[in-house]
Length: 63
Image 1 (tube, rainbow, N blue to C red):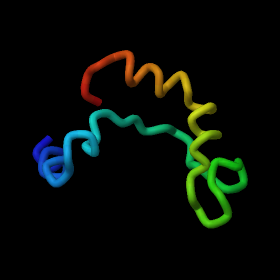
Image 2 (image 1 turned 90 degrees about the horizontal axis):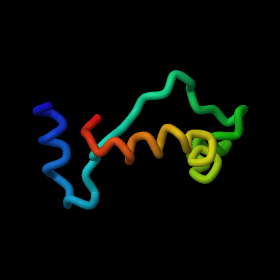
Image 3 (image 1 turned 180 degrees about the vertical axis):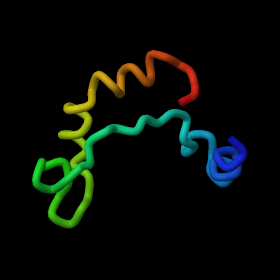
């Protein structure tokens, strides 16, 4: 908790991490979730994990 506060303190409120989830699967270029240069394909990942993302924002609690 203390480390989280220190990291977020460096950023404006709109830039702070409020919630996050870890997934059991590694994102890879082979699964087309990353580009060959290892950049995330946001639209594809947003669609694939839409239920998890909705659950995060619907809960309203810290995670």
